[in-house]
Every structure is written in C-alpha cells, then in structure tokens.
Length: 510
Image (cartoon, rainbow, N blue to C red; front, top):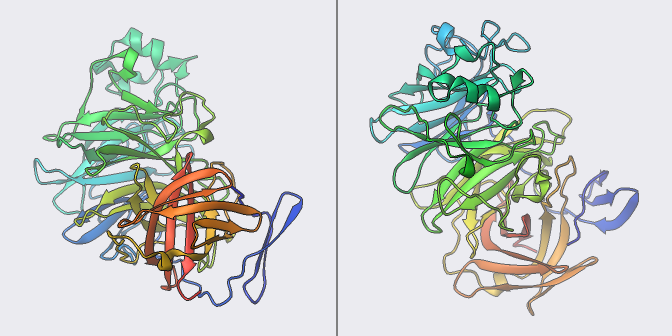
C-alpha cells in the first residue's frame, strides 16, 4: 500500500496539492478543485472528552474541569471550564480541598504538584442504575506517576458533583505509603517488595492512577479501567451500590494485583493511556480503546483498539496480540486514526486521541475524541465520528464527523460506489507525519488502481460490507454515504487490515 506522508505541502490557488516523502519528490497531484472547505470549529475546547447521554442531550467532560453539551454531536455549548471555585460542575471540591487534594493535585498536597498549580484530569461520568445518581470519576495528579483516583456524585449530569472520597493511589514511596489506603489490602512486605523500587514508586510495573472510565458489562456489573503510561492499563470492579472499588484476590499468574486490579496492557512506561471499554451486543465483544504517542500536535497521538470476549481480557488486536512491558507498541493494536488530511478540511487533523465511545438509543456506535490541527498551535476541539463494525467485528471509523448519517442496511448499488476516491492510509507509525490523500479508482469490473498502485475490491450484495486489496494488503470494511465537513454529500468507505485503517471519500458529483 502506497502511503503519501507530508514533509512539505504546497497548495495552489486552484487547490492542487503536492506531497513529498523524505528527499524524494513524488509527482502526485491531488486536486481539490471545486471542493468546499468546512469550518473545523466545534464551539468549545474540551480535552480528553468522555461522553454521557441524558434525556436526549449529550455531555462531554474533560480535563481541567471542563464540560460541554450538545443535542446533535456537532455543535457544543460550554457548561464549565477552568480551575475556579465557581465551576458549576465540580461543586464543593475547593471547599473540601484538604480532603480532595490531600494526597495529590495541588501545591498543598502530600505529593506537591511540580508547578504549584491545581490538576484535576480526565473525568468520566456514568448514571448509576442502582441508586439513580450520576457518578463522576476523575484524578488529581501531581507528577508523572503520583496521582489519586477520586469520585463525586450528583443528581444532575450538569452537577454539582460533590466529592465523596479517594479510591486508588499511585506514586507513593516507603515514606508516605501510610498516607494511602494501600496497606489496607496488602501487607507492608509485599508493598515494599513490589510497589517500591530503589526507594521510589515502581512506575514501570504498576499504574499511574489516572484516566478512569466506568462502564457496565453485559451482566450489569460495573467496572473501572484506568492508567496512563507507567505500568500500563488496569481494571477494577466497582460496587454499584456505593460506587467504590472492589479489590480482588491476588492472582499473580493472571496479572491480578490485590490493590490495583487486573493488568490488561502495557507497562515499562511506554505510551499508552486514556483507556475506554465499550461493549457491543451485536458482536458480543468488549472493545478497549487506548491512545499512544505524546499528546502535543506533533507528538503522534493516536487511537488504537483491542477486543475481548470477556470483560477482563485478554484484549488482543487484529493479529491476536497485545503490548506487554516495554513492547514496540506501534506494532500492536488496530490504529483507528492519527494525523490526517482530507478534502474539505481547512487544516489537517493532528493528535486525534483520548477517546470515549458509546452506543445511541438506535444502536449506532460513535467514537468521541479531541483533535489538534497543523496550525502551529496546541488548540484542540472535540469530534464525534460514527463507527460501523465490519463483517469480522472490527470497528471502522467513518472519515468525517457525524452529521446524522444513517448507513443503508441493504447496501448500495454498484453505480453509487464506483469512481474516484481520495484515500488516506493511517499506517501504524507513531510520529508527526500526516496521512495525506492519494487517488484510487474503484472500477466496475472489481479492479482498483491509482498512480503506482493497484488492487481489487468487492461489495457484499444486500449489505454495506466491502473488501479491498491494495498492493497485496487486504482490508475489510464498510460503505456509507455521508457529508463531509462542508456539508457536501460523499460516498465513503472505511476498512481495516493488519492493524491499519484506510478511508476513502468520493464526491457524488464527480
């Protein structure tokens, strides 16, 4: 598969695009003539968005005590933002600062913040079916491994969420472990042997208590997955009556720690964070989404996904594998998106990541994330894309943010899908490179071709499923008619193979 990545972009007044790779200039010209450009602004800036639907309104909650709401998943209205005592969502957190920030998250914490500021990150809100309250789980954090998972409750999705207590601690040493609840679940000898290394917290083997997300499994049991870099991604069951953690019985052979829970992925301080688990009743799989890379616009931030038939794993990728401690993790996990440019986008999307996901009341599935742009800054904006499962039960993210598209369950006529496509290949790299579009023609005879590329394709009658092979690599995916960022009708495909996603868009007036 030929992948054109950017090192220089020269866009003419007519909309032409030249791409080069390394020192070799490629003679590809992708014309955007006649394609309208859409506004990439969503109206708000919410970092690390987790999503909740309540009575027809969608809420996203993000780091730095931000929140927004929408009724169409496209236009968002700010609900709260920033570290201040008048923040309406977080309630009395500053009134109980001596408890909420006792361990981490402020200049007055036992483990003080590096910059002396306040840090409340990565909240997730769930409606508790047992007691009828909304529960917010979030972290206060001081250093790259010293954090504290906490929770609050509210009668409304807009808060205020009243701080209820701390759940999990990380980053402790032998000197301050008594300030945590760790020794309530493991003995001191075990803690010092496993959790402490060279007098410091053993962050390569045990988690940073950050990025909590809560979900129900198919049997209505509540779970929390969490973790960022450090010792990887972990899973703990939640008591639905109290909202508190259920600490498991230790089982070293199955990677279960009595305090931190079941280890799912990662370790060795590789880039893996922002875990989110979604259950799909149609495929009967649990999907574990994570982000790799550094979170800045040039840090290679990106979304990956693994799946499992059981809630506690094993979670594996398309090659039945997963990253263990210090693994070359770019080789593991289906990469859904990273940095890319498509027609109608006025800027390339950069560092797409830290996602949540959900199934709406009509059974449609969506991925929710934040993106930065190749504009020289670090501004970010939330995005929501629909996902469709391919025949093998792997999620295929549609190329453009959702605008209410509904896939045809009976499929599309061949005349609707043949033609010229702008195609991007997301690859599997973790870098600042941008996946730029190249042209592929889907021909009536089932062949496909472009400049220095060839292959074949097929569609399954009566469904929206499709398969495409380009330069020997097979992908299984879906067709869906939708609108681009400017509101122009396009036929799109999204397909996955060997942990890689490819997207194609065809303008219907071509």
